[in-house]
Length: 157
Image 1 (tube, rainbow, N blue to C red):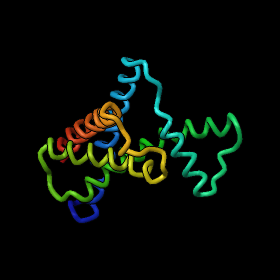
Image 2 (cartoon, helix red, strand yellow):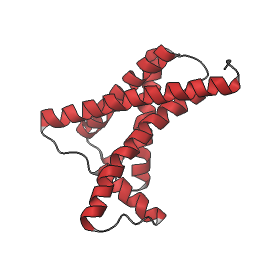
Image 3 (cartoon, helix red, strand yellow):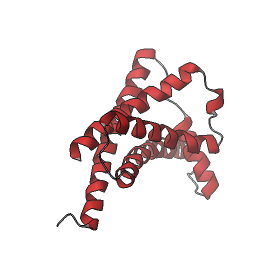
Image 4 (cartoon, rainbow, N blue to C red):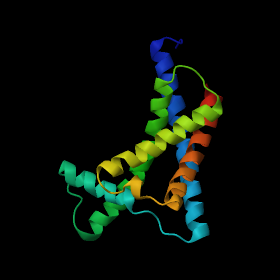
């Protein structure tokens, strides 16, 4: 297949999928390392998001343990979808290769917004009330996402 419009679009989608997966892996690795080093628990906001979205859409997650297990399974999937979706969106919307620092900033910032904006709208979190430590705990993994995704995306350009 030549580099026609369809071929170019598919190439961008593949670049987004691969770079988003790499970024999401980096974000999760940094997050889990932080949990291990500081002995902190996992965030409950992803599972709260699943519950609020299920409530808003009328989806029944079941009762008791079964509902909890579904939330626990769906929460990381939302994270994967966000990480891959941000990178695919970037790959489709940015018409030319940018420097990796610019790409890292756009991807990391985009992922942070894409992760937190829905939780803010759902009133699960309020970034206006975050402490500096809260901001750092959220920004560092998203920076890792941006750097990893940018390195892969620019390598595949």
